[in-house]
Image (tube, rainbow, N blue to C red):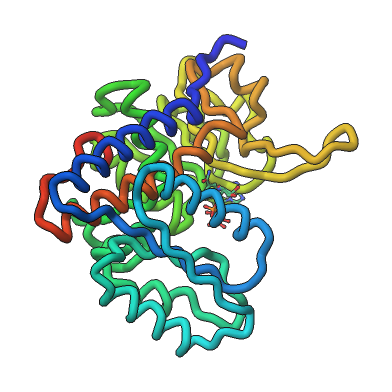
Length: 296
Ligand code: NDP
């Protein structure tokens, strides 16, 4: 293996420390701390684990975590009423509705109901449009985390060839917008892309967000490239459950210059960026200067 490992766990711990320092300063300055409301509908076990760790880290950073757990049977109207109440609550600066929602609830309607200024996931169409048009917005947490790691590792991204593999609304598309904003030459690839390996081999930066275990091997990678592996895939190997990325780690690390591992790469950055976005939302709501290094 020749690639340098980009340690997302350590990087995320650094972001959380900066968030905590900023929260302490805001508390001194304003007598208030940022509040993050997380809404969880139903009993999805993965979502429950995720929400628990979000709440713990919110508290650890000195912010206020507000949890709303609703039963599987919650109606659309009831959920929207809760969102409207949170929009109007001055102690709440960020609202996150944990996805996926149970099938009878429409995620688009729910996200559209969130005040864009409190939309710390950055999924509201207003934030999507603002990001696309280069205006100040809330930036989706996973691509924000990827961008922070890329900037820290590579410095100026200007002029680099970036390939984003995957075109979802939550990862691929905002990732491409962010890289474009940093003046990369961006190619988006997806399931209909022809001769994918030829496309990805042009990439100085390869972001893989596909959801297919170890699909990308070393022969898809340009020598020296920086790989950000967003994929989180649960597989069984040697009789054990394992988490693997979209990239075959050993094979890619033979060719790449740097790579994020799975687990311990992008994953920890997502929650750290959620906390960073909550601080940003607080500062914007109060007309205070935004925290340096915690926004895109
Ligand atoms: P989606 O399923 O929404 O999107 C997957 C994308 O991959 C689609 O654009 C699809 O193309 C493309 N794709 C699928 N198969 C292929 C293929 N064979 N060749 C090329 N492209 C392909 O996934 P998400 O964006 O939500 O998530 C992607 C991965 O990232 C998942 O493993 C998910 O668990 C992980 N993830 C990790 C996060 C973190 O915190 N680390 C946060 C969010 C996601 P098409 O559009 O043509 O169908």
